[in-house]
Image 1 (cartoon, helix red, strand yellow):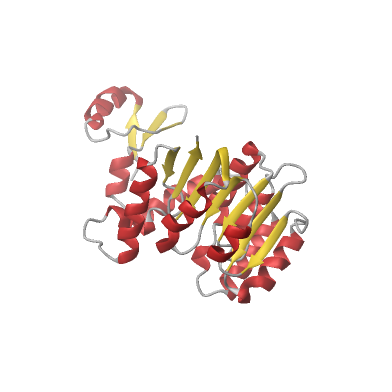
Image 2 (image 1 turned 90 degrees about the vertical axis):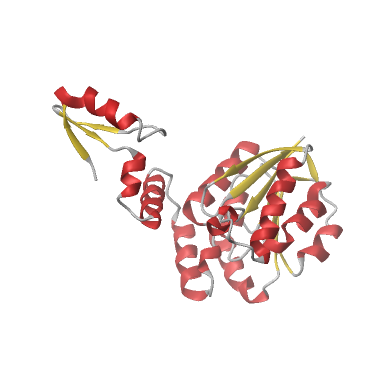
Length: 259
């Protein structure tokens, strides 16, 4: 899948490849040899899943690795839950931690804790004395969540609420610097509207799974979840109260900053 070119023939080959590779080329140099790997040509020799995994693994290899607590949490999540793919994981977790560290929030709200991976990452970026409120409806996960919050040394920084977020959020009299919505995808719009006035100007709203396994761009996908996520994504993009960016990381992360 790599094209081996002699240096004397490079220019000619590059001109030939340019029309096939509009997204750019990557070069790997040795003292006398250059390897040219046009991304489109590489993708043609691999199925979509393998190509995406190759890119993901490369990004992961060049991202600060998770510490032993997060590694253990990910391992136990895969062993003890029915849907471990709900875990934020290495790449997204590191992004969440970086965003939080840059913002230095005093208060964070997370809707949908699962086993606590994202909560730990976000809480590590809190300002001194800051607090993260995380809401999880599944009581069976409480022991696992609390176990790893303690192992991460974040018991004073993370307050776990077990119950229905739609009932708990209205009674939280707090102005949040950052909100992470990672609950039932049919409720994205509901939770966005519910928390919006609780987010301070300049605060961030993060929404997970906005690409829905790629179904979002599949014109033949008309199931309820996909259609609701499409509608929600359009809603945020048209909301003049925020500026937004959608990132193709993991299953899609939408980041909105409130004006």
